[in-house]
Length: 221
Ligand code: PGA
Image: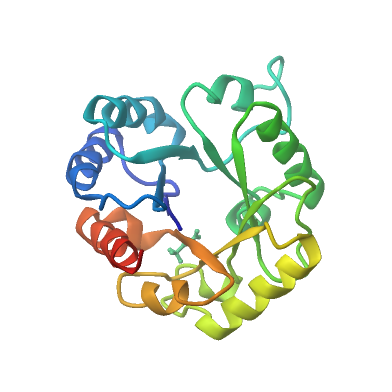
C-alpha cells in the first residue's frame, strides 16, 4: 500500500526538516506500507539527508523531472541528476498540465527518462481516458474537481476508474486515489479492491495529520 505526500510548492528547508523529524519516528512498521514524500526541488537534498540519518522508512520523490537528459536545458532537472536523491517521481499532475502546458507526449518522455534512470514514475491521470505511458506501473487517479476542493470522488467511483485502468493497461498496474484525501476519508478509499494507496496534497503538509493517515493504513495491514 502506497501513501505519497505531494507538498506542491510549499515548505522551505526548515519547515521540511521539521516535518521529517516529526513524521519519521511515527511511521508504523508494516511490511507493505510504502511511504513517499515529494518536497520542492529546493528541499530535496536536505530531506533526503535527514531521512537517511534518521533511518526513517520514507522514500523521497520529486514532483516532476525533465523530459530531456543532461545538457543545455536551462531550468530543468534531469532524471540522471535526480536519481541520487529520489526513487519516485510524480509526472503529469493536472496542475502541470494546466499551468505549464504539459502534454501527454511530454509525460511519455518524462516517464522514459525516469525508467532509464531507475526512478519509479507515478503518472497522474485525470480520468479513465488519460493515456498511461508504456511501462508505467503506478498511476494516481485524481479528477480535477477533487483536487484541493475538499470534495473527493466517491470510493466506489475511484474503484470503478481503477478497474477500467487495470483492464486497459494490465492487472499489475497499481492505482492510487487522490484529490482531497485526508485522515477521515482515507480508510473508505483504500478499502476498495482496486486501490493501492493514495496521493495526498493538502493533508500531507501537516505532520500530525499525515501520521494519522499512515497509522490508519498501517492498522489495516
Ligand atoms: P489535495 O491534492 O490532496 O490537496 O487535493 C492532491 C494532489 O493534487 O496530488
